[in-house]
Amino acid sequence: MKPALALCLLAPFALGCRRAAGEANGLTLEQLLPAKFGALSNVVELGDGRVAFADTKAKLFFTADLKTGRVDTLGTRVDSLISNAPPEQYKFPGWVAHLGRDTIALVDFSGIRTTLWSESGRPLGVLPVAEVAGKTPVLVYDTVGYGYKVDYQSILGGAEPGHTVRPDSVAVLRIALKTGRVDTVANLASPEYGQAMFGEQYQQAAKVFAPNDFFGVLPNGTAWLARGHENRVDWRDPDGGWTAGKGHEYAKQPVTQADRDRVLAQVRERGKQFGMPQNLPIQYPFADTKAPFDFALGRPNGEVWLQRPRAEESAPLTYDVFDRRGAWVRAVPFPKGVSLAGFGANGAIYGSIKLEDGARTVGRYVLK
Image (cartoon, rainbow, N blue to C red; front, side, top):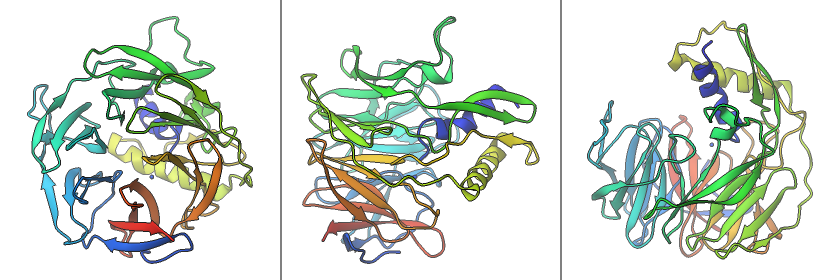
């Protein structure tokens, strides 16, 4: 197996591996979008209450009104994106961000670019972002002029000869969108490693289910860092001051053989698109126990929601909520088949809902 193919298959696990309507103990469903999608990105609420999101399976960009059920497809998906393609074109829309006022940003995973759109759905242009730490997209933005990017290049390789590829920590870079100035605002813990095998090729890879740190920002540039080893949330003020959160105890879940089999099946399925032989011997390094969380998302009001791992893939999800001081507030159980997709005004919580036929749609919830 070629190294590039191995890295492509390993990357989702190296980066943290991540993502039935009704009522649960923590949420009440208010509105349900009567439409079906293959797979959903995050959900961003617009100023008038509509939402924007991408279908990462159909590779389309949408706005939708949950009150009326109307869904509008924005822009045009293309199979090949030229270097100076107009902003209304995209190849693989994968993430949506709100940049303030009425401007939203669409991150194109394949085009490695971010396009700007008005909330009415009009393409505004391509966001010029300085290329740092490799040619990968910037996913995190605030509303005061910065983009943020984790320097995974230092782990996955591709740096200058002699540069360490096994650092003790991984830098989070802040990029000034107007000037291109770059500085380091945080450091994530380096992943735990083990040996992986693809056919006759061996290489080091991040352990699946091992703790990973997650990083995000609030609209005003206040940053949070969810620490996987300590199960805590630290906060960084815009002026650079840090507040360390308090670790929250959790019950460790063992990594089962069913977990291992499921991950390897997913790797083989993903490898089909790269021509990977399905009978190729594959081994991955796995942690003995699962991390305290495997996904994190910040809420504009100053909360961070950490998604607990599940003993079974089909079990309902639960989220641990930490406040702006880094203190654990509560656990929020979600209905079965629903995962957290975004937040909105007036307490809105958006979920990606798995329907009986396997399709997805969007629901708007509130906490009880």
